[in-house]
Length: 272
Image (cartoon, rainbow, N blue to C red; front, side, top):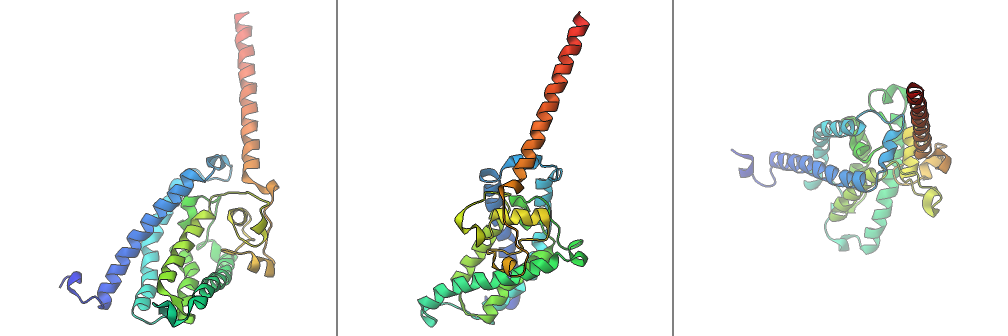
């Protein structure tokens, strides 16, 4: 019997359908959103930084693609359980009211941010990060360039939420999309500083510092947990990656000008 001939509520059909949907969907989302961020937002001059790995973008893409299948296989059981009615997802807003609908958005983000903070911070323990959690200068294509287990552990709070608290099922899908977009956005290496929400919102500049210094800014959306547990580092213009890149490029240009002058003097001596 083919899978398509099984009943729609057959668990094997659900596993197969969701596995295909998630696996294809994550590729589409990754290449569409990360590609747009890479070509439209990411400052390509950052690639001249001495800590930027050779062929890093290609390595990021390869690592992401390798992670997608095992990550999908680990995630699909949550989705199957959810569509089979074992979670607190609901369909009609009037089951809990519009007030709760909007409250659940805020609560989802706060709850998952706090949980991911601790998952992320624990992954930076020496006995863990050497084989599970690595880092380098961030790029949009590096947003998913993680060990599959690393990515899975950081996704668990999103699934756990709907087993602890009611959440509208379409809102759940929307928040999942937002989560993935945010993850890509904070990997653009941007170090713009001085904007008003900076002390509250964990943006690209905070996450860039996280990649550079390893011991700070573990939060996903907010800085609350980092401030509360003494791991917050304030973005500053003096920490901008581009300062080092510009200094390096200026040094190279000066060296090239010096070589050109020496070459010109040598040629002049030969003519004389």
